[in-house]
Amino acid sequence: MRVEIEKIESKIPESVKLMVHEETESIHRLAEFIEQENFRYMLLSCQKDDKIYQVQCREIYYIESLMEVQYIHMKDEIYCTRRRLYELERILPPEFVRASKSVLLNMAKVNQYKPIAGGIMMAEFENGDGTYISRKYLKGLRAKIKEGLL
Image (cartoon, rainbow, N blue to C red; front, side, top):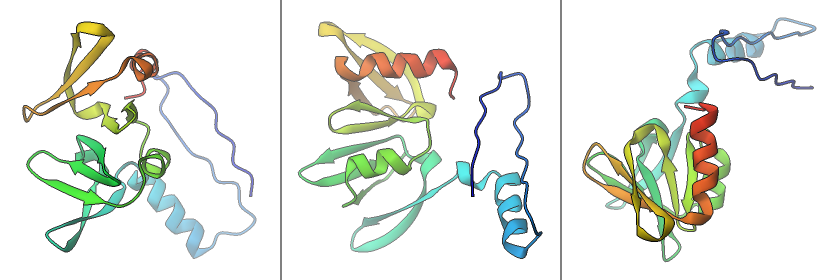
């Protein structure tokens, strides 16, 4: 099956047109999935205290990699996963961007960006937490902000 994606201006409402040979139950489920925008609210499996949890990606502030474990920082909780950062970067929604070699940042959760000496920036969140954005990734982050991808 072929998929076409067309970028439109932000003032035009987004829509999807499914052109199918036959209306099946799976096509109706796909249409419902799209209409309810479930693709925007992906769940991620992670662990804490030897228990497995499903967290909503939109509630993640940032993901930090330390010693082959990825720590998922939420408002009041920290979970972990063994999935590699590059795998998470590939499957997470577009508001997640690389902020440094070891951090993925959810731009939708950032309250403010503050410049720090040496060309790096600090992203601060509503819960008082924060993470650094390295010079290497700053240009890509600025481009996403200017494109209005959030």
